[in-house]
Picture 1 (tube, one colour):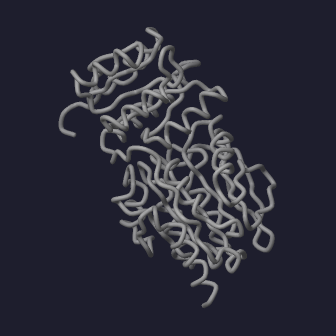
Picture 2 (tube, helix red, strand yellow; picture 1 turned 90 degrees about the vertical axis):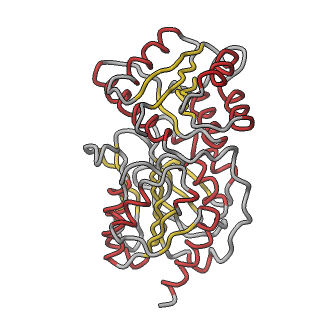
Picture 3 (cartoon, one colour; picture 1 turned 135 degrees about the horizontal axis):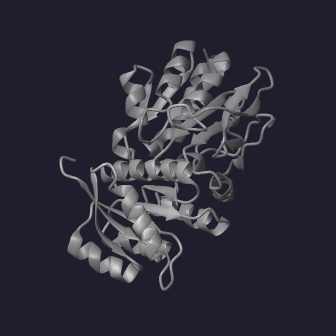
Amino acid sequence: MSRPIRVLVVDDSASMRAVIGRILVRDGDIVVVGSAPDPFEAREMIKSLDPDVVTLDVEMPGMDGLSFLERIMRLRPMPVVMCSTLTARGADVTIEALRLGAVDCVCKPSGNAAEMESEGERLRACVRAAAHSRVRPGPAPRLPVAQTGGACADRLVVVGASTGGVEALFTFIGALPADGPPVLVVQHMPAGFTANFAARLDGEAQMRVVEARDGDVVQAGSVYIAPGGERHMRLRGTNSPVISLERGELVGGHRPAVDELFRSFVPVAERTTAALLTGMGQDGAAGMLALHEAGARTLAQSAESCVVYGMPRAAVELGAVEQIVPIERMADAVLRSCLARKER
């Protein structure tokens, strides 16, 4: 955008509205055009101010953020970034909000100066990505479950996603068969949210979905979601691979990072299919190139089906991608790629 991004802040706390407002305007490319204490005022301000992005509190009196988001996406679809506290209910509701069409979620700014700076930078980045996102209102329709999973159970699948990835992963993982090959996933998500995300996926998918634990033996029929927070997820071993959760510095601004997970699959590249889904930035592109050069099959989500076509585009531009696939066909394409390599 050539002009500043115009944001409406919705939160029932006056002090939090002020904090979010100060954080957003710091770099000059974002302006706060209004703030509202509840969805009722926010509805009128959306009509009169026509903001580019709305930041929305999850838990508010009168009408919660989830109900308000559902109305926004049904009546006037627009980019929404959810602001949540790190509570079990907050995380669960936020994940449902992402399914309903919210672009991303951030933790409410809190803590010491260093934490506030880090959270503030993520909030600004999310708002910038939301302003350039493709709004996909409402949860995607449930797809029929793909077949031929058991025939490639000795294969490995590794996936990276960021902005828009929650909805994309519900679509992709929900279409995999119960006997599908093991899937390891890094989805950029705040700490405290990935356990709820894995539980929600597990309740809807045919495959077993868990938040990964250090030392987990990778098994067919299971999906492992990297926990958000302080550790990178890597694959260790070749014959009976296990998951390793290791502390380390941020990589490309992320921990866990898709690049770190992808690179750990290079020793087993001949048995691996890698998929890079919607997300801002370029995390995963270099790792996918390393996998591609080592003999893995590589797929990227198509621009038209991405909320933010950043990470897949970076991989395509590096020459790391064999196939570009709409998210609605990703499960079938991944299984077919597994079978194709097995038959060589």
